[in-house]
Image 1 (tube, rainbow, N blue to C red):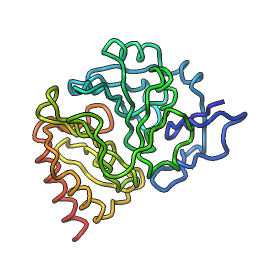
Image 2 (cartoon, rainbow, N blue to C red):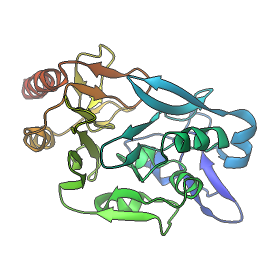
Image 3 (cartoon, rainbow, N blue to C red):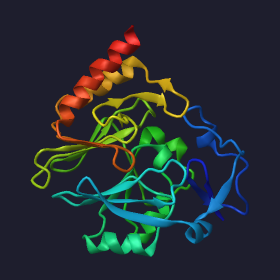
Length: 267
């Protein structure tokens, strides 16, 4: 069976029974559910959940309904060089795959960090064994190996002109953001996962080593992130879940957020 953790949504490799522990949830960036470690499977999920397909800020968003685990949503990015599925989900449905194929399919899957690996191998297979791009610094967190995994290194990876992955670090060593600015997105957009998390007021981002356990990110990591993003122009910032987006003046909002956070942790 390919067990799926009900708290973080990660799918594990094939084994006769569910694991005794979920190392992702036992890490201090996450948590074990209050009722203890609980497991499901992709087959069981398909009887209780469905993929939610909706526009989110002008892009096709994919999620689960009812909400499951961390409740991230994935986005289809139709860049000039190819289609990227940004982030992953625990459930793959025929309806979702058909919707992606109707929009030209998916050329690669890129995921920000281990909390959102979910059922990434199921998604790759359903979409034609497309490559899954992950930063090598987070290799140890993969729970279901696959030939589809493509490990990249360093701080920048250009997928196509105007589309690049950036290793921001901080939340996880390999925490990744995607920057997209080409003819199809001339004002630019940033997709930061949890490296920079769009907060509830949708006018700022913030930086945490652990979001559920409220552990702030190291100031040195935030300063590094600021230097890495310095040359990126973007108008919009797309957060990790539905509607958690900054639409317009995103660059100014991120700059102000860097100032605010670094002043707070230095006080």
